[in-house]
Image 1 (cartoon, one colour):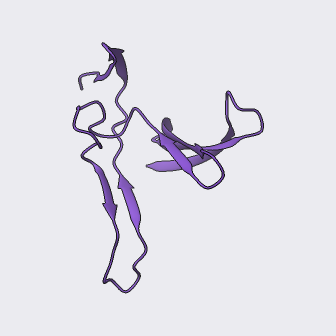
Image 2 (cartoon, helix red, strand yellow):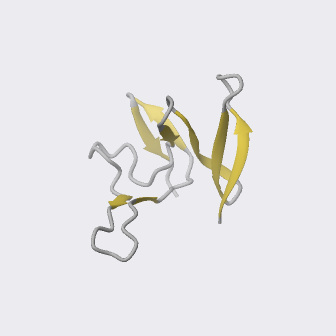
Length: 94
């Protein structure tokens, strides 16, 4: 189950972040990036580290032509642990 938790940024005093958790494990952090931008940081995006640009399980929809044409971004997380080897994310085996 996905849940959210408001927290303080560990390196930027006074900046609040939103932690995104899957089954109680933090899998991503959302934080302000400038005046009008946000950044989502996660090593747990499904497909992250696959050398294919945007992780394949990140879907961007503009909903043009629909009754409510509001864009959205859908992300899928893989909460398995990982390591970093040779500058790349390496997932632990199931």
